[in-house]
Amino acid sequence: MPKRPLLSGLLPPGRRPRPRDSSTVRRQGSPSQQVAATPVSRQNIISLARLLGCPVLNQAGQEVARLADLVANVQASDTYPAVTGCLLQIGQQHAFLDSPAISRVEQDSVILRTAHIDVRGFQHGEGQVLLARDILHHQLVTTGDVHVIRAADLYLTQASDQVRLTGAAAGRPPQVPRFGRGRWRKQPSPGQVIDWAEIEWLGASAGEPAAMRLRSPHPALRRLRPAELADVLEELATPAQREVLASLDRQVAADALEEMEPHQLTALLRELPPAEAAALISGMEPDEAADALRDLPAAEQSALLARMPPDTQRELAALLGYPANQAGGLMTTVLTRASPEQTVAQVRDALTAQAEHHTDIDAIAVLDASGRLVADVPVFDLLASDNQTPLGDLIDPGNPPITLRADTSLNAVATELLESRRRSLLVVDDDGRPLGRILIDDVLDALSPSRRRHHFPRRRP
Image (cartoon, rainbow, N blue to C red; front, side, top):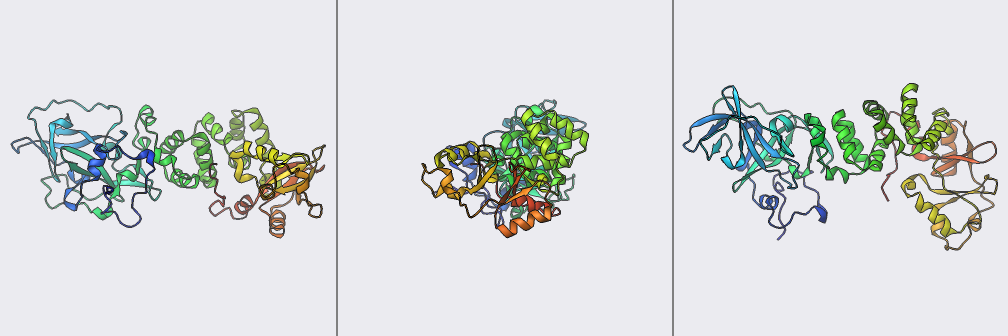
């Protein structure tokens, strides 16, 4: 019988954990599976906010300290991180105890199995963090419904001799007194619990050292679509944004930046080190990269362009030379060019080589020997043709290509797209040589700048 997710019976609608692929399934009998198989009820969810400041008792039930914090390894492979120790407040001093010294954790107390306490501070081990200091009230990303939250509380569950971090709550922190046994304190509400299996913790939001943050690969974030990643990036503080971007493949990061709101993207680029910002912009589609640079002051544009490969510099500098409200400023320079003599198979190979730009290519620019435009053949026509068919056989002499000049106004571009019922149009120079292609989503963006960017999904092939 399949095992239920740890908090599956407690989560409200919309908070169900998403199915995980086979690469993330835990091996049989692992600690996370054992916890996940344990029934969870209102009585055995332990609120960290409620527990802080509570008594720490020895075996005889005598109070020996107050709980200052709990330590957990949040970067281990387990879905539900194990508590590895506790930080105690003894007068004006702190003492750290490893988990073997803890007998059990209850709703309003911690029971020790030792009477000996060494007064020493907590030293960071690999992946270990203080839950209250480093996670509580800091930003977290929920990957089930893709939101950035601030942790108002963290929830723990004791299974056998192991205490694990199993959930979090978003919103304002609960009003919890820091004195007495706290018997009247409010019980945690399971209906508000977000399963920790759906949470990504960002060390940067807690000021963790960079070396520690880089050990966290954020696998769940890497499974999000670019538009979802853009939503996450827009809600995060700058250090956490940099951590997320560093954990992503460079092309995926660039795709996510393309989906961000222009003002948010501009702010992010200005916060990044110039070399890092230049590398990310270089991975964007040319038209999107030019738009990102266009919103920066000229001096910052030049500084970023100087850090890019020469070919990219020239391409983006040319696009930036056109006004944003004219065809030249709207176009992308990504084109698939071919001659009438090439076969369908050869053109398909050329398209395969440009797979990373697949959402910007919906037709093939067919050129004569001098590089002038002869036709604009839709990609669909290739799919419906035999491999050995010459591209020239697909040209309809009665349907010449619709072209624009670089100085065509935005309104004229939009009108031409509507009347032609095309997804894109080619921009040519005075000699009829293609300069670039205008995509319909870029026209929509330009016509409605106050609304969310209208990108077609840029899925990786």
